[in-house]
Amino acid sequence: MAAKQRSSGVLKAKQEAAIIALLSQPTIKQAAEQAQVGERTLHTWLKDDQTFLAAYRDARRQSFSHAVSMSQQYSSLAVNTVGKIMVDPAAQTSSKVAAASAVLRFGRESMELDDLAVRLEALEHSAQSPPTGSQMGFSV
Image (cartoon, rainbow, N blue to C red; front, side, top):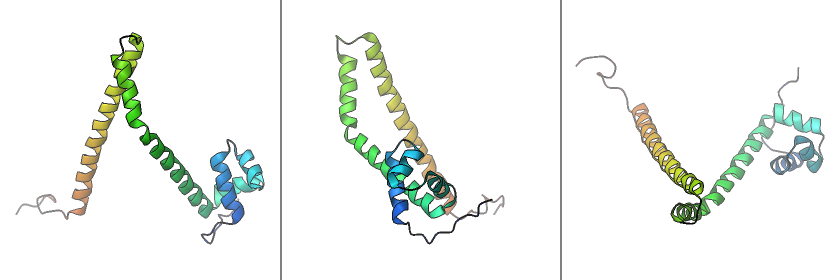
């Protein structure tokens, strides 16, 4: 059984190249080739090297966050497009229904997220507040 590697917290140049390759290549084999490391080495890093794994997860988060940010730039255009389809007399009925469903689904999901945020905020507030006697079952 392989022992877990303990890294110093600093990635080697080959590991940084491997992370870039993992983000841009469809397979681990292709990522290993691009980074000029062995496929087995890359598998080992992904399995046992906690510093590498943390850096890879962080890079994935940053990459996804960037993609979300880019998609938000087009959200008003998307809503306008859906709105135009809903009111276009030449549009097929199925297209109008799909557009209307998308608007309703987006509205519902938005309200659900708002509700969850309010509930989470209340839970966080109650977790930070010390319990009173009545909350602990004591009467005063």
